[in-house]
Amino acid sequence: MAVTRRQFMKVSAAGLAASSVGALGFAGAGDALAAGVRPFKLERATETRNTCPYCSVSCGVLIYSMGDKSKNAKSSIIHIEGDPDHPVSRGTLCPRGAAALDFVKSPLRLKYPMHRKPGSEKFERVTWDFALDRIATLMKDDRDKNFIAKNRDGVTVNRWLTTGFFGTSAQSNEAGYLVYKLARSTGILALENQARI
Image (cartoon, one colour):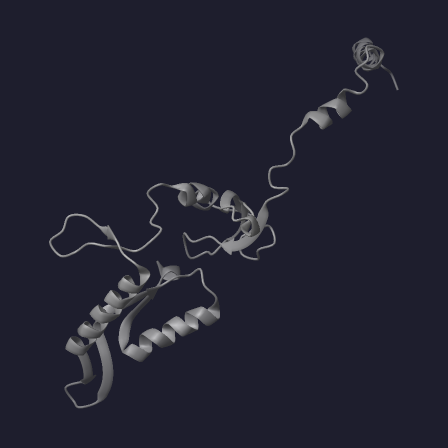
């Protein structure tokens, strides 16, 4: 096998450079660099598996949080990434799912129920009890007013056409079944799911 002059010069230069690094005292540079690197930020974080809330694909996400509940420190989410063990997404996320940390940290994110009184121009914070009671009252009033027990032919239909129900795709099959049963038991026909949108 013939070696050209150019190949010989390249190999010689590489060998000289490698031996010079050791001779000049840089042999422990790798160890010193490793000692100076800060620890991995997720090493002490708590990992929680969850489902991305954005669309009907229901990709798996890993949520990392810091804070010790036993010492009354407020837990805070510091990182969100795709779950490589999830059968749907295998660790990949779309741009919205990859930016989920911005959604969590957004100052515009709603964290509690809000209510706008009739005629008012602003929303006010209310309790969960108030919000759920209000929803139940409005649903009952609407159902009492608009429930159709029988059609024109006298056939029992038990329909409630003036209210709809919107479900989420980020739930288990069992939870979806319960939502379906709840909506149908009230007579609601307009039942939609995020997975179809």
